[in-house]
Image (tube, rainbow, N blue to C red):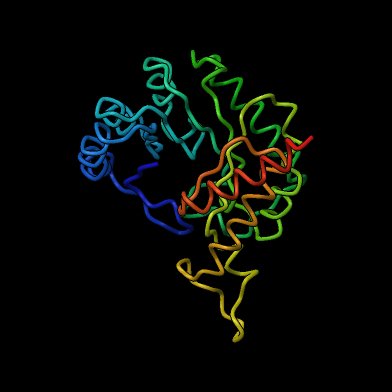
Amino acid sequence: DIGGESTRPFSDAVTPEEEIRRVVPVIERLAPRLSVPISIDTTKAAVARHAIEAGASIINDISSLRLDPVMADVAATHEVPIILMHMLGTPKTMQLSPEYSDLIGDIRVFFQQTVDAAEKRGIARSKLILDPGIGFGKSAMQNLLLIQRLHEFASLDLPLLIGASRKSFLRKILKDLSGKDRSTDEPEVETGSQAAICAAILNGAHMIRVHDVANSQATVKITDAVMNAG
C-alpha cells in the first residue's frame, strides 16, 4: 500500500502534482519486481490514474469517493478493486471529539449509501472492499468496539478490511511504567498489533493491513487454523 500524502490525525493535504511526484516513481520501480498487488492510497482521481498506469492495481480511498467525484470513474474504467473507508471529516479534523449516535449503525448506513453510490457510478460490486476506518474519527474505545462488533457488518456481504497495526489506541492501552504512550517502534506495540489482528479476524475481518508482514502472517495462519479446526 503506497501513499504520498499523510493521513495521520491533524495532517495537512498536499497537491495532486506533489502526490504524483512522490508515488509514481516508487510504483514504477516496484511493480516489475513484486508478485503481490500494489494499492495506491489516495483520495485524488488523478493520482489514482497515474498510479494504475505505473503498475498499481488497487485503489485505497479513505474518503470513499467523497473528496473527488472523478475517482469513481477511474475505478470503473480501469476495473480495479477499490477500498472504501469510513472517516468522520478529514484527517485534519477527524479526531476533534468524534461523536456518533450509534457507532455501528451509523457506519453501516454510511457503507450502504457508499456502496449504492459506487454501483450507480459503474463500479462492480465484486470490486468493493469496506474498511470501517480504525483510528479515523474514532476514540480509543470506539476503535475497540468496532473490532469487537465487526461481525455486525456481515449483512453487507462484502469483504471487510481492518487496519489496526500500530495505531494510537493500541499505544495508549500499552502505556509504559511512567504512564506515557508507547512509540510505534516499541516491541510491545507490535505485540499489541498482533492481538488486534487476531481479534479482528475472529470477529469477521477478511483482510488486514499491517506493517510487520512476517509476524502478521504467522498470526493469521494460527488464527485461521483455530477458526477452521474440526
